[in-house]
Image (tube, rainbow, N blue to C red):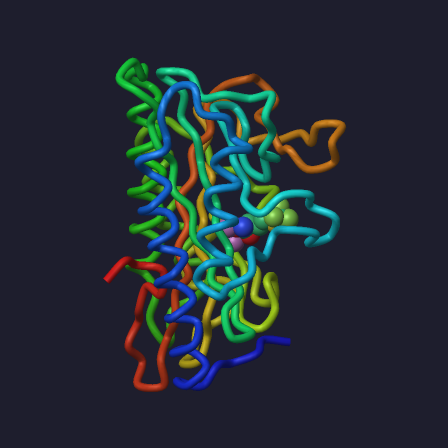
Amino acid sequence: MITLKTDAEIAKIRICGRLVADTLQMIERHVRPGISTLELNDICHDYTLANAAIPAPLNYKGFPKSICTSINDVICHGIPTDKETLQDGDIINIDITSILDGFHADSSKTFIVGKRATAEAEAITNCARECLYRGIETVRAGSYVGDIGAAIEKHAHKHSFSVVRDFVGHGIGRIFHEEPMIPHYGRRGKGVRLVEGMVFTIEPMINAGSWKSQILDDGWTAVTIDGRLSAQFEHTIAIAADGHVEILTDAG
Ligand code: MF3
Ligand code: CO
Ligand code: CO
């Protein structure tokens, strides 16, 4: 069942989305060689609470921390730890979901650490960002979920990268992950038809090698099967009652 949102509900998700965007902007200056992913977690956790919000990942289906930190070959759901510090040349995705006034907003960015990134690290990070916006550009009342994935796949393949199939975007609102699922692959004109009131994420994960993933023994961390790089960007998108399409997780 797809829960359509009123403009009043979208307004609440927009307020939460602004906080999520601010959190990502705030954490960027801490993304430096030597900082641990646990320190990044704690800074975001404190910032979220200070803004009267709740970090959605904490204890979600047993997830132990407040944000996801996914470095290099980690596709998504990396768990912050004091054992892991950022190295010059790493790429790290920081994924923030907050709950404010009962509504979720979800966004992530991949950051390049320091000054020594490889050309491939730069290229995959740029491609993943472009894939997100190519997907968003297809969204309108009357378009199809398959249009989003088709646009993303086309752009990733043009750069000889692959698209992860094991994790998808999702409807969002009072519930973190709800229908519809938004695959980042697909065919134009296929899948659910988009209508006014839908709010969902688009969050393409782009791999340098194989699209296949595997989960580490911690039960969460998803990594590429070949050890090659993966990058991701995510926004929460709404289609308002008048058909206006808006990114709810943009910093104003
Ligand atoms: N924020 C992630 C997403 O984009 C989900 C994280 S679930 C967690 O959907 F439990 F790992 F936090
Ligand atoms: Co999401
Ligand atoms: Co997310």
